[in-house]
Image (cartoon, rainbow, N blue to C red; front, side, top):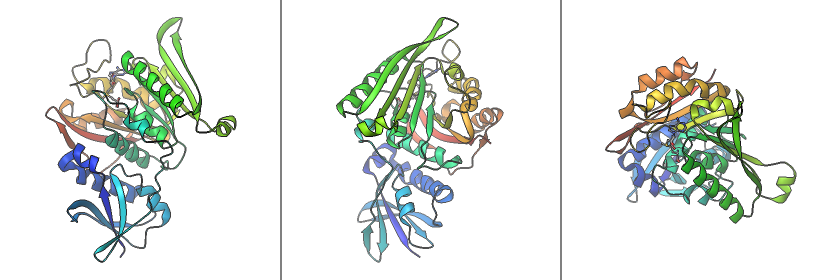
Length: 338
Ligand SMILES: C[S@@+](CC[C@H](N)C(=O)[O-])C[C@H]1O[C@@H](n2cnc3c(N)ncnc32)[C@H](O)[C@@H]1O
């Protein structure tokens, strides 16, 4: 049986420490179950030349399409075919279509780690009925300064977000405009007031861009829209069934207060209980919603019940629970819209 070894990105080990291999095992299992043509078996870990690898077998040699898909694993640094004691490098072909500084330049307290964000986006798309290499529409209803949005753009998707924090909204607006200018991408960007019955309820950034003038002229553009408002109003800003996936990192109840329903919610789950029904309406049938949350703020069962009562079906996924810091043990829950 052909054997393969995946070298884990060094940053992944730094961020997740001991959890990094386990998270990769889980993500690889989801790719194997939901995306790859090949039958993946024997997923395990190995130390080769003193470095941690995730190893696996397939029934037949990996076709190029599977190598391309695996190139998008959030932890993938390099992929090798194992030949006796030697490793033969396979040519990675990730979906990435923009330069990686889109995701790495912004640094701020409260940023969701970009590798973790990619993992959450990957498993959510794979749990949906969509393919990773389709042109998807992604919504992050608690988008902060846009880590999910940027990862979505990186994959060639359209990206939509809501965040109540004005500083985050302004920082992301400023960053994205500057990045597009520096890259000399043909684009339009406007910030407009959002009114309901004449009252101002928020601001909206609308961006449309393309990597080349020709693509821009041909209408082959990527869209970004971010609304600075309470996510409980998300349904007022986007039409029902607008998005293929909803992907979000919920407030941890530590660094960010959850600002739902007036004052500070006691638990981020209170915000989710109020917000998820609206987010679910924005999903297209066959789409999926993936949330990461701090398990100290509520259990998997509680969050599962919230998703279930919004008409979503919780997907069985391998364990992605991992330690972030003393106050945060983070986990992922993904649910499909029938
Ligand atoms: C864990 S952070 C997400 C960070 C984001 N993924 C990033 O990397 O920038 C949670 C976000 O939820 C936002 N938030 C909390 N309550 C909200 C509400 N009711 N409506 C909209 N946004 C809210 C906070 O402002 C914060 O940006």
